[in-house]
Length: 127
Image: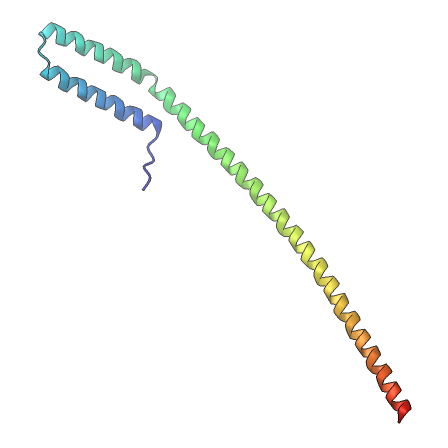
């Protein structure tokens, strides 16, 4: 099964993991209170900077996905159009061959009828 996580979800998961990891590291680090507060402040600023652009990144991703979707729809329409043209061309070809075959069959029937009549006429002369 394929996991369909977007880049925004992945980024959010990464940032959450970073915060949790930083918190655990701070709890086990042998530092003074002041150093710990300074580290927390730095992590907080980093997190704020990274999440500040998150809405625009998500909006950009959504626009990219929408553009790809529109492109795929247009491509699908083109393929359907080409398929329709091919079907119509095929129908025309089949109609042409069907007509030629019908004419050939009719010509064969006429030739056979003419041969039959000629054979009957020659047999009546011989009798």
